[in-house]
Length: 287
Length: 321
Image 1 (tube, rainbow over the protein chains, first blue to last red):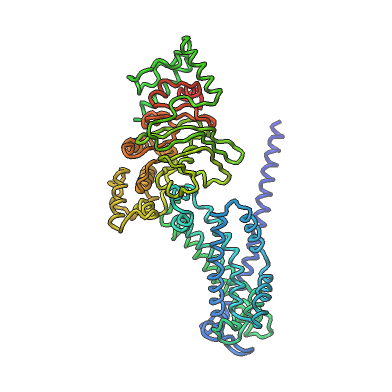
Image 2 (image 1 turned 30 degrees about the horizontal axis):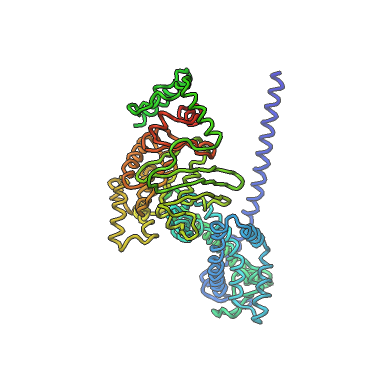
């Protein structure tokens, strides 16, 4: 009797150890790949890190140069993308969370937004190509920014809705019971209460679009030269990396590695800032 | 303040379990008439007749007691509330008197909070909620299409169960209402309103040095008084309170109760409470709800010492609920 109880306990211990071991192994495999990617990136990218990277234009094959025009283009198009996409996304998220919480159209919007959220970015690129680039007759930075905006929008819709839903109902009720119109409650009470979450969501959207390649390939394309003309093709890091990495030229490949490291670091820094913002924008602490 | 009331109910419970009858109930109201008309009266013939009468009233779904008052601020007739298919409030007819506290008691889910939310049309914000019947505020139908719901809510303030200050400074919390309703002419005027409201809510001395500090940094009891200050800053006619003390400790509760007693001089107050002692302490009229029905309403002393409906009696003697 006690022998079988003992055996059962040993069996349970073994099962537990097995489950723990397998999940630990899975985690290790995942982390190993991540570590390998980062290691390769840092090892190859650091070699090309120099001041000229930030001061010189993309060079012709075999010549020395930097990524200045690509960095500039990426910053401009990412900022424009978020400036177009985030307000639309935020207002749509506000509609879903506050005005149309239970309406049927909201359910449809939410569903479509989820599809858009996971749509391959190359489709977004093709869409903007068809709608803008073909009609304009040439590639342009503005088309690139619009493509990035289309990608940033569903992200902000989702984060805004989620963050607004986290605001305690009691707080909304209190404002409503004071006789505030919904827009007043939203702008004066709900937005400030959800501010850190909304800002974080936007930063993460910036991080997301700053690494997008496919949509820019079809819209902004690339530019070997310094250009601030939004109506013309503009250089940008992802497409430069894409083209240079595939090239047979050693100096281009090196620039691609450095650019990749640069983007990764930017995303890392943005994520850290996003984390920091959460605590910094919550002065009350308690919610 | 809390202790004697607590004991009363314990004694009531003990009395019920031993079958002693409960003539000691309602100690706080000794000196009022009708102390002995309660359960002990069941054996006498007259009381048996009264019981029959009650049972008949109950069967007809009628409310026992005095539902109407002279010159009411709120007059509710046959109010029904449905949450989807759920019939949450059934044919409630009751008046709310001016400068008086009306307590609403009853077991959870009995409809007392639902009724409270009818009075400032907060049920409008719940999807699927439907309100029928007539509710008039100073003689005007609050469901009238021409009535601005925002104006109604400005006239009927509300304090919630959980203290819910806005994530703003103490000053801005109180100034919120006057600002959205444009009540203040200039900064000095607004300062004045904030100061007066905090004083009336008995919070001024505790916060006067940190008006710019966050409202969420106050203690629970202070937060609830801040919410009351915020409510009275817009000069409402009625204040609705939905279990305002259930999240507070006894000392903070006593302060709020004293405050309610003071505010009664200026406002009509409707308070939902799970504490019968609190209802007995702060209210002049008490309404007992049960499963969506308004069972009985009357003078608080009368309801607690001489409930006319069997359900009311069962509830206040602690037989269920």
